[in-house]
Amino acid sequence: MSELKTIHLNLPARTEDLRQLEIGSVAYLAGRLFTAREGVYQRAIADGFGMPAGKDALGITNFHCSPAASINPDGSYTVGAVTATASFRFAQWLDGWFRLSGCNIIIGKGGMTSETYRQSFVPNNAVYLTTVGYGTGALLGRGIKRVAGVYWLEELGLAQAVWVLEVEKFGPFLVESDLAGNSLFERENAKIAPGLERHYAGTKPATLRRYGETDDKTKEVI
Amino acid sequence: MAKAAIEIPDDYLDGLRRCADTEKGDLSAFVIKAMLENYEAAKEDRRAMCGDTGLPRWYVKIGNEARIEGGPIALEAALRRATARATTGVPLRPNRVHPLWRTDHNNNVGINAPEIEYAFHPDADWIELTTVHKGGLFGTDYRMLFPGDGIEGIKRFYLDTLVGFGKRGLACQPAIVGIGLGGSKDTSMVLGKQASCLRIVGSRNPDPRIAALEEEFKELGNSIGMGAMGFVGSSMVIDCHIEVGYCHTGGMPMSVHMFCLSSRRACARIFANGKATFPTDPMWFTDYMRRETIEWGRKAAEAAE
Image (cartoon, rainbow over all chains, first blue to last red):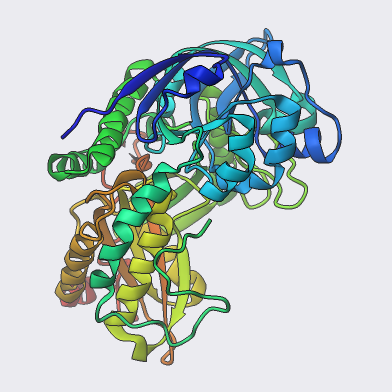
């Protein structure tokens, strides 16, 4: 079995740093990143509140995640484990989000479609890193050195708030999309799909069909 | 609850190691290796193995001779208190929100949450509490099949669910796959979930024909060419468990559930004298649970064997 290529990236990453990322290689991060998911997108973009702070305070790496965290009586934070949430649900906000946030790395679970990469990521010189497993919550938790700030805690609650995290050797992640918009998951899907027919041989489609159902094995549920 | 969130159960771990031994896909093998390191890190640091600590829930099995101080109301209050305490203590992610207003009590307690399911056991004075923290979004599906769909229809829906949620690893496989067959629609869902979350890896249904189907489905799932995270490989199914319930004569409802790379389950059996044991196996599905007879007694028990 071949060893996977491993890259250590300092945040914020420059475009030339991202050029060395090939789909399927392993990445570890050091520096500052922040969590944001549907609650933040809704508030920042759709509700028009804009970003809760500037790029210096937040960084330009967006993690689709809510940490398993709690607030101590003295106001400090305990962050235990962090694991990404599935990203495909957030595609609708991405164009506005890249414009607003200036992000060039999105970290999440399961990636997005190559169509989304070409439309929204490539013009913004952005890549997608996927968490591994899922999820390596404890390993990622170890990589968090400090909570640098929490925004919109009152407005969105603990799970949806913006958590700004200082990280070191934060990973592992796999490069899911590169600067050209290629997708690792779609490459793997294409390898697996032709072999599926053989295993379906002899099985029967259900008598009661589902409205809109397809038997195309190259389709995805996202 | 901390044990469930932090320590991967031994039966799942052994099953995953067996997958790792035969995995030839380099990406899939990398994923499993990272997960094995993650379990170690979780135990060493006493932190949750996965940041999505799922929807914590309870399974309560009550011995027929057991009496609960304060009655069932006190028991339910204690389980809700334990859930809230573990949420800040471990910490767990406060995942539970109102479905429409998205309000979050930050303690995983709310309307109809956590779920508490009950079962009973003859000739016993203990109470067994099992907590399961299962992810809540992907890897589960239900379908109304009919008797004419037969085993081949069951196989098709099983493959559809595996492939559909296996792509991109949405199901967080390799998983303990639970299949609920029969019952009412809701029973089929409940049985499938219990089969994935409460039966340990390596256990088999006592009906030899169902046990053979479990073996066949496990092999089938691991031969579709897909592994961890939906990468090319062979690690999809740690084990397959099937549970059945009598259903409408015209139907054959089926559910599929996947208990993921963070198969979080912990069990405590509490005896009348206050002592407790912590078995790996919740022993949820017993001869009594799977009984076919009206009455339960010595005779019925012998007939079941």
